[in-house]
Image 1: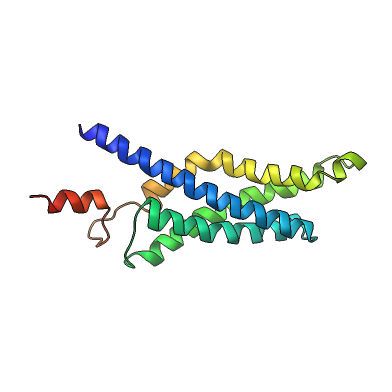
Image 2: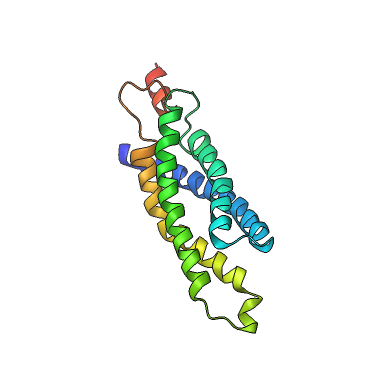
Length: 161
C-alpha cells in the first residue's frame, strides 16, 4: 500500500514537473526566437532564454510541483536550483554554439539556421529531463530534517485522528 502511494505521489509530481517544464520551455522558445531573430548570437540568445525559462521553472517547481509554500529554505532551494540550472544551461549553450559554428552554410540552411540551432538547444534539455527530475526530487527540493516546510501528504498524515 505504501509503495503504491509513493508511486502515485511521484507520478503526480512528475506530471506537474513535466507541465511546469513545458510552460518554461514555451516561454524559453518564444524568448529564443525573438532574441535570435533580433540578431542576438547563440550565447546571448541562450543566456536570455535561460533566464526567462529559469524564473518560470523555479516558480512552478518549488511552489506547485514540490509544494514549498513557506519562505523557510527559499534561499537554499534557489541556490541549489540555480546550480543545477546553470549546469544544464551551460550544456545547452555549448551545444547551440557548436551547432551554429559547425552547421553547413548554404542558401537553403540560412533560412532555417535559427530552427536548427534552437532544436539543438532544446534537444540538450530533453536529454537531461529525467536526470534533472531525479536531482530536483532527491537534492534540490528534498525534505530536510528539522525543516518547517512539509508536503501536504506529510501534514495530512500527522493531523489525522
